[in-house]
Length: 483
Image (cartoon, rainbow, N blue to C red; front, side):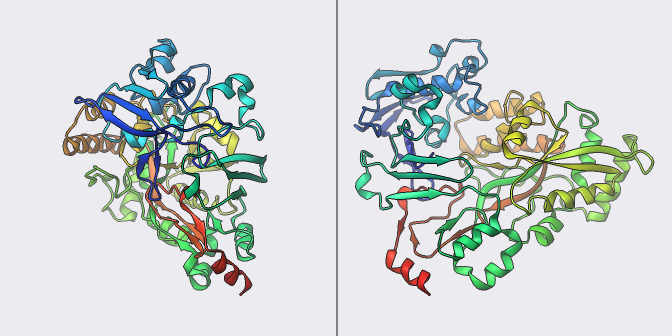
């Protein structure tokens, strides 16, 4: 998507926002009104990109009829939540085109990372003239129209997606790669074989069970860098016994994170005792689960005591299920380890492995008891993680609800001083950790395999690498593949 569409701003090679569809912008003194001036550029079919395309696109994603689970992402826009919940018409949204090249955006509150927000996929424009003519079919090859460096030519479900350079892109002269083929797969070892055979240049998911072989034989390909991403488990608090804080604490206490990262994953991922990854911009950190320094045997004893207080024990096992997404062959390794850990506190969790699409359908509807969603940050700010626990967030899968938590996030939204804002966000995280709103497991690393002849690939916290910035050293490629 990031190769085919460009927002008002876009990401550079290190995922920092730069001018995109807008060539410049202005911000009001109170930080609540932004004026974007669009560059003179066109869709891939030659039609002009206009400010009205953005108005149409943002209204469309917030329209309750669209039912986008990511609609909440636009809630900082004035009246966005009221529009998304059907309380106000889409025309009430705080965005308007004063002319074809000028977009005026009003916010509910100042947003220090707003230029990152408008780089995000939810804020991309869609071609109004094509969507109205083709409906949902506008995304099919032959119909697809974008304003980015590439456009869609092939989409064979579960086989491959092909995009080709868009000659009408405003910076096409600096785009070096003419064609990109994406091969979606859950069989990472098979993908590695294709990479070794020269059929792939980049592998986005590394087969963890072969990490030692890779370190010994292909270390120059390994990209193992910190990213803004967390692996966690969520408990459905609308169901018993997960509404019981004792059960939630026990489940959290009894997970041995060090065993998971050192003996199961062993790729260098740090254990997680909080929700916001280290290195997040404008965030003080320093907030952790209370038991972080407690020896694991003591944690286990406390977890057993809490479960007994909640009515469970050797003669009364808590039987539940842990829903996971069917992905790589190793996707069960961590859940199976957690399953065994929980048996020590009288919990029998059946692992329910579902197809990715079914998994994602069931999460927001609350059709699960325990689940393993994980999260990759949408932008470099603590709120991309903390907002997941707001009461009305569609991605608040466990239905956590604490007014004090939401109030602190609201206060942070209206605080212009970044240091004070960071302190408010840390206070909010502390509340969620005390409530055991999540079971954080580990912070993720990039885990990609990139051939050395791929130039311009930059590791970054958001883990976005747009093809626009990449090139191939064909001589080096030929030499390596012939070796």
